[in-house]
Length: 306
Image (tube, rainbow, N blue to C red; front, side, top):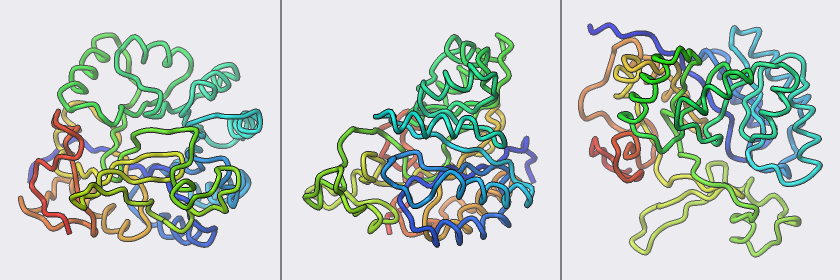
């Protein structure tokens, strides 16, 4: 069996709006999964208030007792003073590292001398930007989701040449986060104003499909966030990721079938790649176009949609 350098696996934050019970059940199961890192927190919408910081901290402590490295993820789009107050509390939590998904989080963490993770929304494309954040306290960074493997390989090589050793993380599975807006698309779908949305996005635990006239799911609407319609699946790229210097593969949580996804990626990083024509891990169209320098919705492996 081909031996490859070992990547770590991480669970990204849940991007969708779930119930408290679903969060609790999901992370209770995740404690036994073969992932080293778990990201917690609300990154999309500050109106999703079912889970408070103390609730995330409680889940984080339980996961830490199971041997997981816990990271608290910050909100990506900061829109108000209330959002800033919540961000300050998150950054000052005193226990867990924070993933900065907005420059205001970077500023707060850097000023406090705290190490942090740089999220993909910071759009880091070159060694100069990475060097600035490394001096500010960045410990690892997530590559932009639209960056191809060839561009990332060159960037990682340039970083090594310049002595930048922060770990790189790649979004390896899930609906790709593409954009954020001050408007709530899910509320608009239900003809409700954003500030009186009645939390209709909770009716869609994996987002709301936006389909073309040909009935293809082009995007996934998740409140103010737009994601890809298909799920990116890079488990067959794990050997190449390790060889180019990627340290972590991120798996974005889904409400169903996530244990099987984690198991498949764990097998892939140990060299147990599946046959060339595997079935989809869960019922979803898959894509890997960005990774191969193609349109993001492309599926270069030709997996059929379910």
